[in-house]
Length: 557
Image: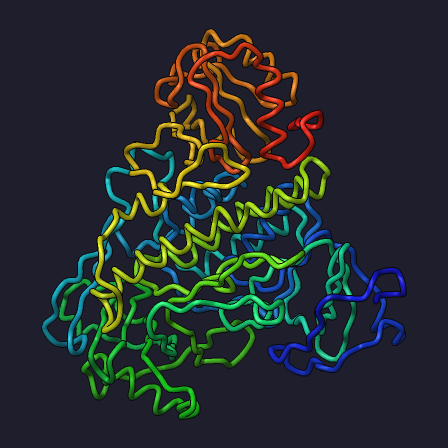
């Protein structure tokens, strides 16, 4: 209970992963100021990595009051993912972030070129490893392009943009206790020696693979193959003698032990990320031992190596990450939702993990916003699991197929074109009428229900994808007067092919008298190739089904 105003909570737990100095004891709601509800976000996001920050950004874009807490004192300096792929660029374009990402792109990687090799050491002969980028098939399918940029830069931009849109983001703040009741969640937050309680309608767990919330709310996780711990270092080391004039962006190496890599951070070959499989029970190696690991991987026994902090404002020079393949059995338990690594763990091959999490945040944000504003029924939120869980499983398997060529682990199988993995996922849920489970090849995106709506160029470097983001959109054929009137009557943004847009009705799978309905996330919810005897009633029924409301309330206003 909180102040005696809510029913008994369904779950409560003290979290071991609290901020340094933060207490882990339980607090009774009457324990003075520590027990008061001191903030009223509609959604509390726990975890300030890429996926948590993106969740806060998309929620703020929809006008939701959101508070994000992150136990670390600042963003990580570790680059991790090396690019923003085409689909994630589309999502960030919706919230006004694409230009800033392009402006901050890494200037030492040529667009379309990313050299990945395997070798014993960086100094020895290597063989190229096939790297599947955003292939040419995607160029006509999107107004965006994949952009080479390190994840730490992206997170800083996402954080700043989320704050611009009104999100509250607090670093050095940990969740130490969580209680849920039928009306919302109550969180005990710790910032140093200070604690407070925060009340929210919903909580989004973006606290990583081992963050603890998933286990607390009782969601099991299925694993797909072995996992291992990766020890990582951010180093300044002149490894140009090992490169001998060669260009290498990522090297998978045999020494000092299997599953070692060196990843370049500049054009000069002097800043690198080092990673290697490690047993955390051995304890943390000291700086000298870490430098020896880097020298062994480079094949340069006398190279000077300087370790750099990986978290701004701290001296943390060594970080560990879990590498494996796992998927939560559910994405939702009551008022708590999982996104990113809290929902799934993917091998880094393909760069799918973070991108999948960002797409999850985007899918969930508009649904939470519409439910919170009373525009949709609570059952709409069930479609989050129904739509995103199958996509994560498919994407995870594609990452494992690619891992077979990079690490001594992985799963042989059919390699699906990367652009199809990114742009082709198709949803099937109560919020999509007529969807299907199989991804759509990127060249075949044509307005099928459950698929990402097609891109059609518009004047001024714009796209039909720019029509979507916060509202439902009805695209009607040039002669579909009935559909257009029905769309306006139900508060749907309505455009006509021909009068308002280039005549791309056939590209969207409809004739001159047909129409299709696109959700705020840019996915086609429903399509009628031709006219209807009762367009008003048909559209009302469609909206009521999608929004999980009684038919008489089926309006997108």
